[in-house]
Each structure stands twice: as C-alpha cells, then as structure tokens.
Length: 267
Length: 313
Ligand SMILES: Nc1ncnc2c1ncn2[C@@H]1O[C@H](COP(=O)(O)OP(=O)(O)OP(=O)(O)O)[C@@H](O)[C@H]1O
Ligand SMILES: [Mg+2]
Image 1 (cartoon, rainbow over the protein chains, first blue to last red):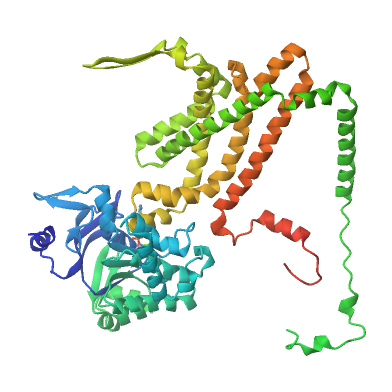
Image 2: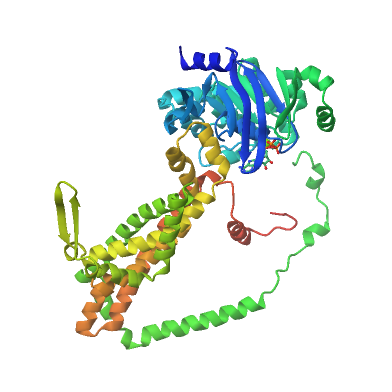
C-alpha cells in the first residue's frame, strides 16, 4: 500500500480529498488561534473561507503549506502530511529538502503579492522551476511565456514588479505560483490590497483557473466571487468553523446568527 | 493640443501673462559665504605655492619612486585581502545573528561587541604578539598522535597578523551592516520564497542578500575607504606598506613633508577611484527601482531645470 492510500484508510480520508484537515490546532504561546478545524477540499473544487479579522483564516492557510507548524490535529495534502512522514504510528519531521519539494506542490498567493522585487517578471516566474525543480532554462521560459499569456501580461515579461499596477502584480504572482504546477492553490485575500477597479481583472484570472479544474482554497471578502465560483463556503470566527455549506444557500439563508451578522456587514 | 485650443493661436495684442517677469530671490548670505570661501582658498593656495618647505619638486620626484610603488602595492594588497576576508566573516556573523538559534545569535553578538569595541591598533599588536600566549600550535589526535606542530612566530608574520587582526575587526563592522541589510528586506519575500519550495540557503542567496545589497553597498563602500586608511596602522608592526615605506625614506633623508604629501596623494587617489567604483556598484544594485528618484536627486534636477512660469515640476 502506498503511504497515501495508507493514510487515507487510517484517517478516513475521502479518496478525492486534496486538502484534509482534522482537529487542526495552532497556538502562539498562550494564544490559541485555531481551535480544532475540520475541513475537506475535494480535488478540482474551490473552497472559500470568510470571517472577521483575526479569526485565524491566514493562519489556517499557512498551516496547509506548513509555513506554520500545527500544535495539534492532522493536515494532509493529497493524502500526505506536508511536514511529516508517518512511520510506526509516529510522525517524523521530514528533511528540509523533502519539505521544500512538498511545499513546491502547494502554491500560495498573498495579499501583498510578494513578488521578488529585484527580479523581472520573467525571472520571478522561472526562479523556483529552475532552482527547485531543476527545469532547463529554455523550458522554464517557454512555460512562463504561456502562463503570462494566460494572465494577459505577455508584454510585461521584462518589467520589474514596481513598474506594474497592483492588479498586474497579483496576476504575475498567480502565474508564478502556477509555474510550479501546484496540486492546490491557496489565496490569502488576493484582492484586498487592490484598488476597486483592479479587483475584477484578478478575480477573472481566478475564475478561469477554477473553470480549468484547479483546486483552490480562497480566503476572501468578495462574497460575490464566493457565491459564483465557490463549491463550499466556510465561515470562521475566533479559531473555529462556525458554519459551512453551499455558498449560494448559505449566503441567502445563513443558519448561525454570527454568520448572519458577519454577512450583513460585508454584503 | 493646438487643435483643441485654437484660441491660443490667435494673436492678442497685450496678454498680461506675456508681460510677467520672474525676479529671483536675492541670497545675500550665500554671496557673503562665497566671498569668504574664495578668500580662504586663495590664502591656502598661496601658502602651498610659495612656502618652499613644501618642496613640491622633491615630492614630485618621489611620486613614482620604486619603493613608494611597492609600498602602495602592499597597501592595496592588504586592503583587498582584509576586505575580502572581512566580507566572508562578516556575512557569516550576520547570518548567525538573524538565525533562529539563540546560541548562534549570542555568539555573533558577543563577536560584534568585542571586535568593534577594542581599538584596532590594540588588536593588531595583540595578534602580532600572539606567540607570547601560545608558543606553538599543534594538533594531536587521540590514537594517531601529533599530526602537525608549528611555532607561532613562524606563521604569525607581520603581514599575517595584520590581515588576521584587521579583518576580524572589520568583520565586526560589516556584520552589523549586513544584518541591517537583511532586516530591511520585507518578510513577505522569504515567505513567498519558502512557499515556492526554495530552501533556506537558496532564499538567503537568491532572494534576501541580493535585495539587501542595496542597503549594504553604500556603507560597505565607506568601510572599504576607511579600511584603506586604517591599514596605515600596520606601520606599527613593521609591515612595509605605503606609509611605512615613506617613513623609512624620510627617516634617512629628513624630507618629511614632501613624503607625507606623496603618501597623502596616493591615499586620495585610491579613495577617489574607489568612490567612483562605489557609485557604479550602487547603480547596479539599485537597477530594479530605477523609477524611484531620491529626494536629493530630485532637488538637484529641479535646481538645474529651466524655470518656467506657472509650470509645476
Ligand atoms: N506569528 C504570530 N505570533 C503571534 N500571534 C499571531 C501570529 N500570527 C498570527 N497571530 C495571531 O493569530 C490571530 C489570527 O491571525 P490570522 O492572521 O490568522 O487572522 P486572519 O483571520 O487572517 O485575519 P485578517 O482577516 O485580519 O487577515 C490573530 O489574533 C493574530 O494576532
Ligand atoms: Mg489574514
């Protein structure tokens, strides 16, 4: 049995689950930020996470690609622990090189873009494929050109990040994440730092991605996007999932008073 | 523009805008300052030119003297070797200081505290006299026995002690500069890089350090320049650098002032060349933000821009 199948059998993970979280806890010192998160994101689906500031949304995303270590619970991506290997009922921390390799399969897009400011757009896109995947330069460039065309920025390959608008930078950041052929893409409020008229172009790229079958976990305040694109909607508050459901139904008819209150504020 | 505003094309006999004249502010303080400065310059140049004790012809004769050239070469060699060693050690110390390990952090802090705190001259003489502390250096392994053994005095030549002392000292300063540079890179950069799967070493080398360079290069240039001058301390332990060579000549001939002029000339010359190099390095590392114009550069540009009425910069 492969490790993946073994994990799935052992923890009761659905075979098509791309992200599987059970009882995920995270504390910073005495402050417990995540208090037992359960969630499943099936491959090819889009999960949207909403919730007030400080509810732990970013922390949960960062746990998924192991930028933060869990304090408790388990988190599997494509049936594997990101930072551990399970042997004889124990979780062994994996070598850094293996952790890097697994992280490379999980793309992340940040609120503040975080493009490498000393590199051109093209260099941003080929850096990780060259260094992490050992891809030949020609291949990496060809791939980057295709991705830039896909986000509508073919003419910006030689530009530096600060020569681009916020919306363009975020589209480059998405292309950079895609250059690694990730199994899943995590978005942390990708449009929150953008001027209102630039939000649309980024959401359009994300919409196209979802339509192409990419698995996505999106923390967002764009309720319209969640309703239209999301397969499930998760409402978090104070480190727990208060309510989850099909976006359209949940937005039209929230069950919990906290969800109702939050939605009435952001809608 | 001309199409959109046909009115401007029509000749109007007396448009009051055309008659406006800008009268610049008078800067009396600056005028007085200039006169005083010119006066000073005149006095100094006259003193330099007419006082025979400067003996310019003697100085000119020594300018390319073979021993002076050898001394200059030694000074340059010292500067380059010490700077290179200091950059390596300083980078390591800086990385230790930003590492997550408390032990490494404390070690690095202690290093900086000590080597920046003790005067360079004292460190220099200390290393030169290392043999007073350790007569020999030897390595012996448990079962194999002594592997090698050397007399301290055999390898701690004046040149080696100068390199060791000054590069350890300089590394203390560089470590602080490099650490500040690393800290100046936003944390989102390394976060994005680790999200992409780059390793810690790759992130440092490829993402953090290149961006930190913009903050590191200008003060490092200053350090290199002051190091060039600091190497004249090695005269104390009889390394035959530029200053030592000049000293040993005027000790014989008593042409003290002309030789000091020669030494000053060469230091100034090298510093000038280094400053030009530093300028180009800064431009290279700043290439990704060429859109930005520093407030100072803007001031200069505006100061020399042609003045026009009613046009804001
Ligand atoms: N590195 C850290 N150390 C200590 N506390 C942290 C750290 N990171 C986050 N926190 C705390 O964890 C809580 C949740 O933070 P998180 O960033 O996950 O919230 P969020 O839901 O993403 O909020 P926002 O909508 O404002 O981004 C906050 O109270 C925050 O102060
Ligand atoms: Mg957040």
